[in-house]
Image 1 (tube, rainbow, N blue to C red):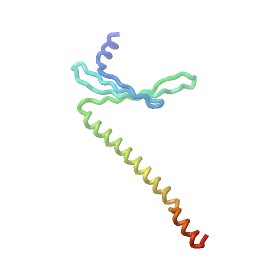
Image 2 (tube, rainbow, N blue to C red):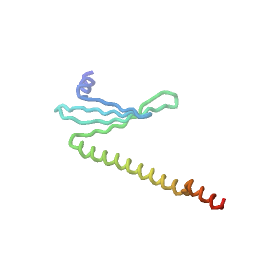
Image 3 (spheres, rainbow, N blue to C red):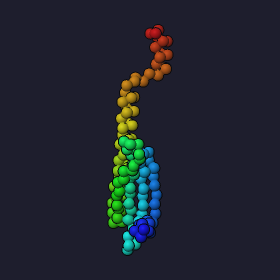
Image 4 (cartoon, helix red, strand yellow):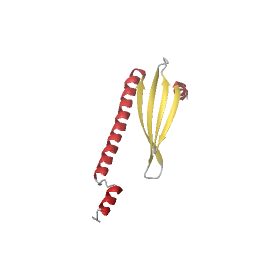
Length: 117
């Protein structure tokens, strides 16, 4: 019981993000020396063969000396995904546009008025 109380005392802040079958937990904790660090836990709901439910967890520990590097890398990664999605959307739009010929109604009208219809 003492260990559980100490663990709760160390938890400073908690936030959860639900994303489909996954939940991400962001917990700020403190050490005995009041030094702070972040844990990020991914929890995935699993259904066992017998129908029972279990949770698979993966945990990351981030220490304050790495916060800036981690934040920069995460931001750059998000930006890369955004840029790639824009590029893919642009490529798809170009492919679709190239499949069709641009014809204006004026051109259709000109053809019929010249007796070509």
